[in-house]
Image (cartoon, rainbow, N blue to C red; front, side):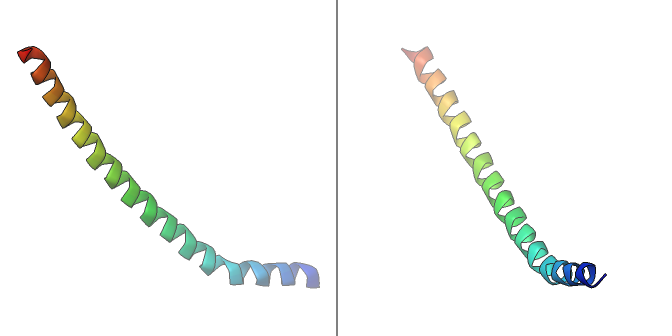
Length: 57
C-alpha cells in the first residue's frame, strides 16, 4: 500500500508539468500548422503564376 501511495504522489507531482508540456506542444503544433497554411497559399499562388506564364508561351 505504501508503494502505491508513493507512486500516486509521484504521478500527482508530475501531472502539472506534463500538462504544461502538452500545452506547449499544442501551441507549437498550432503555430506550425499556421505556417504550413501560409506556405500552401504561397505555393498555390506560384502555381497559378506558372500556369499563366505557360499559357503565354
